[in-house]
Length: 113
Length: 113
Image 1 (cartoon, rainbow over the protein chains, first blue to last red):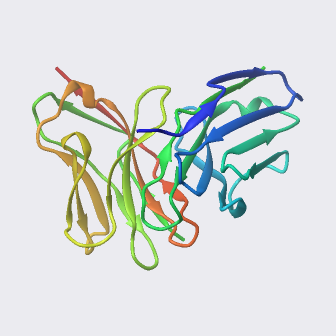
Image 2: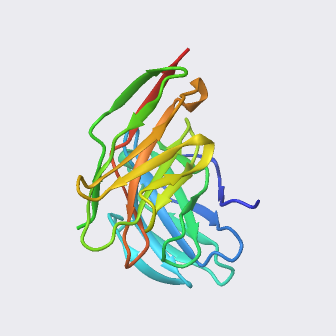
């Protein structure tokens, strides 16, 4: 079965640079969620989209922005990168916001040097 | 606010023995509870969920979880542990408005041969 695809798998950037992470949800899933997981930590919710509209916002820095496109894929744009942004970034998708489980991609590991 | 707590950072069991990974929840309204497993440098894999109905929920890879309303718990169990079950386990509660998952701190399960 098709899964959530994230690209790239690994990304190395320098401080103050920008990064764009991409997420392709499972076909027919209309909701996308972004999470950040620091080393040894639980995933922290950043932002979500339902039917291309932002549906919820968590602890996402102002330096970050995201959107969901007409084909339902989503991009997380990160600017003025800081060392503390180094983390594993997960995208998850689901069908609606009801009781169906979220399906996670394998994540993008961002390293800021 | 919705939250879950996992009181144990690590659980150690011998292969073939039963395992339990603990989770307690605090929600307003109906709890939508989930268990996910994470292997190193991988995304979170859905194991099982409780929405309503039977208190004993069966999931993937032989795992099950028991929902206990009076104790506000949702412990993950398996009758006979395998070495390959060694991983990081997250309990989560779903926000019934936006659908996002709120994770517990995670429990590392170590199964020794």
